[in-house]
Length: 338
Image (cartoon, rainbow, N blue to C red; front, side, top):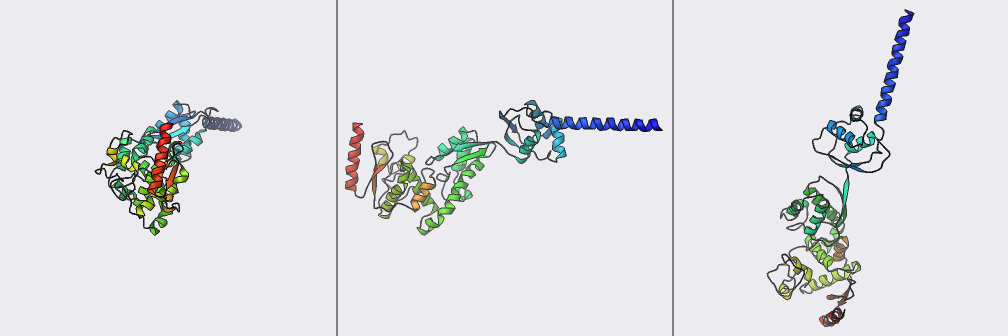
């Protein structure tokens, strides 16, 4: 009997030792593969199984053992929470940190900067070049006559509403989701300034259209309120806006050379030299400063401006046409001498 009890004790000790060794092995498999901080891009496709993802993680050197990784996910009840997307991991991360990101959807994002004054074709190119969207799919949405209403803005396209900002977006979003991110930013700003627009009798479309013209005419940011004042003063007096950027917007395949024939073309609906009032819609995507300049213009009687010849982007402003003509002549002479 005594021998039997000893045998049982030895067996129990061996089982416990084996269990402890197994647990140490298991914990070791969850440790970082190395101390390297070099990022590895890892993509999880829609519909991928946890087994296949674990196997690939091991193959690319991000985890030590796929079976241990799967067991850890099962024990922590996260094996059914895998999220598709593009991730960025380093071998210095332990298995739990990698699992946490995969199940929370902490996907890799890409920064795209959209400066003020771009047209929607140029915005589409920026997101396409970053690999975030198909350019044609993006433009199909922004040009869709029904898109504006569906996003809660005014007009027949989304020109003017693709808000200038630096966006951090993940790959795998639809073209509509990428567009929605930009329109949402516009609507946040619009919510702030809408009361002032309503008080001044200006619609969303009016404000955005005027702001887009100010954006294209402004070379020096501090002049936005002055340039806004010029166009608003002209409208109050019933004068045509007479601004080159609107004409250019209405010229298909513009070659960069604005000619007299273009300025005299009354068939161009954006020709503000021939057609009174605002053009049919925005000619670019303005930023917050230009939008606010329309609602808080400079208190000035200026009706004209001409660019300085020094390349600064700044302008000389005038109240009368005689003053303006003299300044145009002066700065044109200076340009010829340079």
